[in-house]
Every structure is written in C-alpha cells, then in structure tokens.
Image (cartoon, one colour):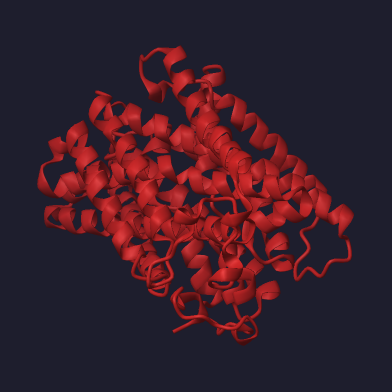
Length: 487
C-alpha cells in the first residue's frame, strides 16, 4: 500500500513518509490526463461544422491548450501541490483557494453533461428513442454518479489503471475504428455528408455566436493541469511531467479532430444529436458495412471511457480541495473527514446531492441537447477562473522567484501567459452569447442561467467559506499528513 492510500486512522510520522514510493510512470500520467481531458463526447458538437471543425479545434489549441500545457509543466516542476500552491505562491492563499475551489466546483456541472452523453450512448443498447428522453437521462446520471462515488470511496490506488484502461478501450480504439470506417466509406466512392473542399475550412461567420463555438472548445481542452496533484508520484517529476504533458497534448488533438471529421462524413448536420452523435455515426457505419452487431459493443466501450474520465475527475479536484482545506481550514471539519480508505467521501457525497438536483434539469428542459449545451457552458465559465489565476500567478512567480528551482522552464513564458490570459478573458465574456446550439430559447434566460451559475459557484460560495472559516477548521496537524508532506 502506498502512502497515498494510508487510512486516516493509522497515524504516521511525517518524517517516515519521505520519500513516497513511485506509483505512476509518466506515460500512465499522460494517459490519465488524456482521459480527463479528451473523449469522443465532444465530437458531435464540432462535427456539425464539417471540415471547419479542424479550424475550431486548432485555434483554441494554439491560444489555450499550448499555453496551459507549457505553463503548468513549469509550475508543476517547481512547486508540488497543484493549482492551489501555484496561485498561493504567486498571488495569495485566498486566491489559491478560489482557484482550487473553481477547479472542483466546475465538476458539479461537468458530471451531468458527461453522464448525459453516457445516457444517450446506453440508449443505443436498449432503445435509441430514449436518447432524447429527459427523465431517462436524469435517472442514468444519478445512478452512474453515485456508483462512481462508491468506486472512488474504495481508494485511489486502482483509479490510475481504470482511467488508463478506459481511455484505451473506450476512446482510442473506438475513435480509431470510427476514423478507419470513415476513410473506407469515402474510399469506396460514397459522398461525404459534409462538404470537404478548401472553401469549407473556415466556419461561416454568423456574428458573436460563431465565436461561442471556439469558446466551448476551451472546455474541451481544460484539465491539462488537473493531475499535477499527482506529480510527486513520478520518479523524476522535473523531467517526466513535461514529457507527460506533451504526449497528452498530441493524443488530445488526435482524439478530438479525426473522429469529428469521421462523424461529419456520414451523419448530416441537421440530423446530428449533440449527445448521441457518436453512436449515430457508428450506427450508420455499421449498417453500411453490415456489422450492426458491433453497435452495442461500441456503446459499452464509449461508456467505459466516459466513466473512466468521471473517476479521474472525482479523484483529482476533490483531493486537492481536501488537502489545502485541512492545512488552512477553508472547509468545515465535516467536509474534511476521510473514510477508512483515506478518501474524502463527505465531499463527494455533498457534491453528489447537488449534482442530483442539477441532473433534474435534463428531465425539466424539453430539449436534451439544449440542457447539455447550457451545462457545458457553465462548466467552461467556472473553470476559466482557474486559468486566469494560474497564468497571472506564473508571471509573478517568474518575477518574484526567478531563482526558484524549476525542472522545466517554459519558453517565452510571459508571451504564453498573456496569450492564455487574453484567450481566457475573451472566452469568459463570449460565453454569455448563446450559440445556435441553444435553440430558440430566451436569450435573457440563457444569460441568467449561465451568469447565475458562474456567480454562485465561482464566487459566492468560496467567499462564504473564506468569510466564516474558523481556526478550529484546520485539521491537518491532527490527522493525516498533507499531500506535500506525503511527497
């Protein structure tokens, strides 16, 4: 048993916990990061735009993914502890708490949108008509989330294997199959459902709503820095973490772009579902090649990838929030309690109650695709706060602590940070403009929902914790050592 899995009721001297045994290779961490960032879930959203999806993915990759990966690599190779440590060192501890809180809070809306995709995928095994059923989607979200909490409460040691395995079985293999089938489909002389000419490389300009498409892809790339909390589990963090990030970047781009193109070849844009689009493409390809028996197998594979991604997110942000709360007293003792496996079960359960309430949105909003889009945008808005703080902190750390040991120094750090800051600010404001994916709903209702989610989750709740915290809420010294001590 590694020190990370030491139960809370087994006291252990701090000195005896150094150094922690190696639990991850850099390749495994790259796969964990890819599993938490990339999936085929986002493909239908961009497949609607055909060949233009390449542009819509590459732009945010250049102005957001690249800065995020390089900057987080430098920060993680110099400071253990994840985004809280980075922002605390560069700005202040309260802002560090805000960063780690937003990293955690965005998952409240992330889980419903992720599991909404899972529900639509499972529907293709049972009855495809269920993919557009709100009550069915809500039930699946609730059942799968609480199942994930149960798995996570058993301990984090097995999560790395689950995440890596889910990525390979449920994303890389199905994604490759989708692309290969698409290329064979076109190679046999079949016309593409979406035009594939040079004139279609750029999306049609429809005003600010067009920019929302690029903004939504910021969410697709978010999470590159999340698993930095596990950097101390690498054998040589300064050298291996950057390698892990670059490998993850390459895998993420391939997973996003190629399957989206394959879907656009076989499913017309006006028939594409944002939640069930991947299975629509598989269904069409399998029917064409007379291998329809593969449809339920593909569905099971996709579900495994999504559930692996969910487990990764359950293990990461909540763990980071727990660690700093025990040291600084940001959360009440009830939320800091660990179960016998050393897992922050009370945080996961409390989050699950809120997630269950939000899942009802799928039952109450008539159009499942609209609900999916709204939850995705709120997730993006809350998470962008993390990146605004991270890029700002990185600039200040280069200035205030230039001689601090860093295993990796990002080239042109200030340029990368300014680019990431401007891109994140633009994304934050543009996110309030509803795109065509929202349908014909009220613009003001959309702004109220997105703005309300951002203000309440991103600012009011963390402000309340900081405002009312008490010295007695600090529990790290009385219980298990912090992540930094375990490293």
